[in-house]
Length: 95
Image (cartoon, rainbow, N blue to C red):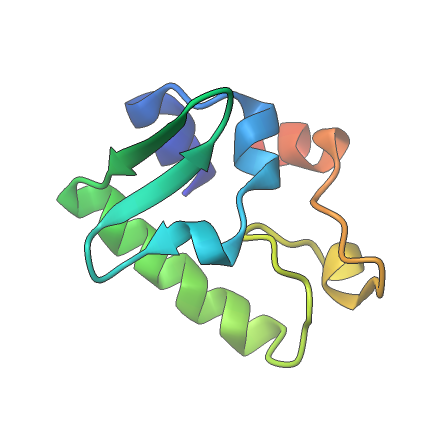
């Protein structure tokens, strides 16, 4: 999912790390990207399918997490401060 977001929509790693569930609109296949200007990224079929799979897996792994971020790690899912994943974790995922 991360590689699809970065490759297809040219999102920066920082933007990907900061994405929250509330920004994802699966019904309309779009993501509200909050940056200097508000814009929507529309998902193609592949992105929509991969994101749907990730949301299902996220819920299965961490059904009670209160972290609002789209991407989680074992640590961030359990952290009461609700941080995004770290840059180091994102880099490990991209390797």
